[in-house]
Image (cartoon, rainbow, N blue to C red; front, side):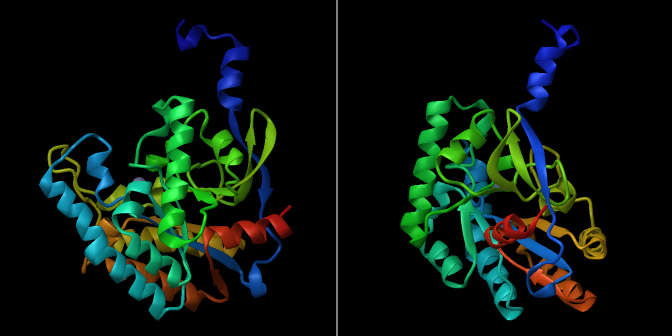
Length: 293
Ligand SMILES: [Zn+2]
């Protein structure tokens, strides 16, 4: 049957599988802050190559750059400005770089799940997905000493079973969906799931502007100052509305000498606007659940 032949019951079922539920915008953020700022870093590193079955030495070295240069440079900026963030890490990367995860957690940041090998969840059988999620949680816990309670689906591709499995595992927050700009509770088949969404969007993702695919023809087409300007506009509006500003960056994308200033300038700009609350996704979830309506 073609989509244009679907009966209403069918297309409604497709749409209603995962929806935005209760909006969670608290009347004020912690310590009277006007705006909550959720900086996030997707530490894909080598899994961008591995997840497609590739073994390109050049692309794997680009992944290693994320660990050798990107992560320390990001952590130094965050430390200098006393800012906490959330790092989404595939299980393979936590296993490959346990010291990196220990440093991230040791400096007060949150570690959260980002697939096992950056696999696309929407094509996985349910049993395989469950096993990979458990293995990923184990790998992050083994490296850092903390069981993760947060999730971001690789490439934002939530599968039909992902959120039910996440709830089964005690996951409290997700950051892969795009239905709103405020936090919201995810509805699964029309029922409140108990999982809080901190919504993402490609417009606040460094990869959308600055990624390179040598053979795919994708090139960075936006100047770093323009990327900063887009992020700043998003931040200014979130501040004016008293909302949430959520940002997605990648160590092997933002970590370069010519780009790390985007991160630092965003932090400086936010502080110059007024009272803002830089927090991990977990902390923002806790606050939004306690005070949101
Ligand atoms: Zn990723």
